[in-house]
Length: 119
Length: 107
Image (cartoon, rainbow over all chains, first blue to last red; front, side):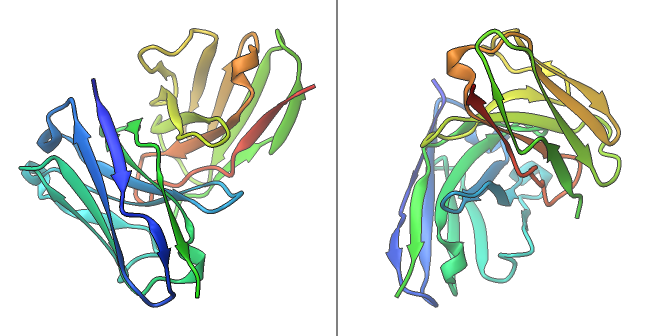
């Protein structure tokens, strides 16, 4: 059974950093790109970025709103993807979802982890 | 960036109704269009990928069509568990933008 579980959310002050983890099981992690999507309270879904597989270069791409502040990485040996968030702003407050990518779509999603940026 | 515009933003319907949602892309995305369902407090769920392919395990009352810039999502006979918000998303290029969502409510 495919499982995707996010962790690491919480309350953080503006300007500080936070790292989210996306722990997976039930599939061959190294064969899949992984996505991060967020949802601010009462708002729609916003694509944050994704990281490709190492055979395809393992590169990450990002939404304009997080470029230079967020970094996505992966540890294929542990089947975990990470979202490092630096210089956090109040507008980064959201539930952050991790999902498995099929090259076309995100087919398995975690339950999300809430990040609140507030002083 | 490719802009995705869904309509309507919300609709009211009854159990058994046929429901149609449209999604328009600001430029051609071929058939790289996905549809997701999100129930309150839950993660999104993939229903349709590449415009018309039904994700495994998803009931056949859900369907999708279209190519280029115009896409349609249909629920043939609305069920109680279908009351949710639906999002389209393009996967043609990054950023993989979402539509603003369509909330399907009980009439």
